[in-house]
Image (cartoon, rainbow, N blue to C red; front, side, top):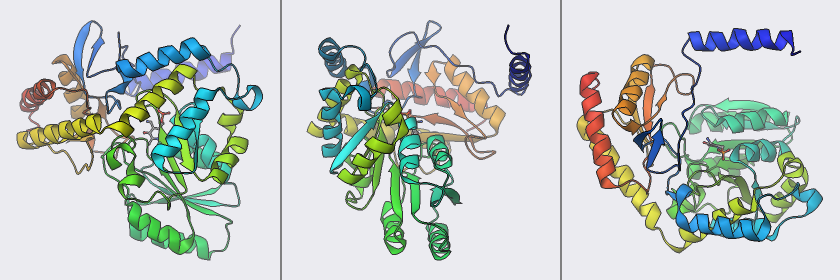
Length: 396
Ligand code: PMP
């Protein structure tokens, strides 16, 4: 017997989603995530992944993962606070701290639970968090979980940030006040104005938290957006993921030794969830070693980003104001955007549509994520396909 109430709830809501075209069908990839992917036997050029540097299927990372699996096993066995830390996890955290130029770092099982755990470990109901309105869902959930008063700040609006910081501090109602922002915003590819943010934070003694999921490996020659601006000693939390440019899985916070010591005793995903697999930790170490030794992949990523943007721009597409390789192609109307993406797929290019509520109404877009793994031939094919579909659907 299963719950009648649950079944009624599921049936009603799933039907509603499907009827409104809001049910998200997930494609199954029949192989690795690279510049090409295979779905239902069809090989497609992949313009949808966050695998910026092409590391997700890199032989060097796979070799290290396999060797660490042989040495440490497939699983960590238990949470670190109960069963100890395998040395490979310590090694990873030291590597991250070194790469980010901070005193210490702590790794989590994903970027999502890193934000959930780190924000709520430090902020509580006596505090306030100023949060950019376009911040990632994991930030929003972490803020909610903390119980702090959350104040939305207009996207990248420094006047709004300053006014709200002033008002919040001068109200005298709150113990600590944090400003939290993505380093690179993944829908538009714009970069947080960290120099101005730091000035405002210094004026009002705000705690600063930068989620650099899309900046790590991409900005600052790979070391991230904070490094790009040379502000390593001015940002309290340098948060990042190991799932995008690093190509594996996991999340981390880099900061002072005190901050990391605190997170290791108070961040609940650290305390109550088993750590990364040893294989994943080893692959991440290799990725950071590669990024530290050379900017080859980073440079190719940017070159490919420029090439794609220039090509789409010449074709007459609206590519927005991205400052990074992230290349949105803004179509506007939601239905047309979805049709555009569907036609691209039929023609061999996998680039997903992103529509309201993920982005504001009438700014539907097909988002392209060029990577270091793409060849010029693949990008030319992408451009030729955009031209064909763009003409067919009267978008250009
Ligand atoms: N923060 C941002 C800005 C992200 O884009 C994402 C991933 N979409 C996350 C956090 C979560 O990272 P992960 O996928 O590693 O859990």
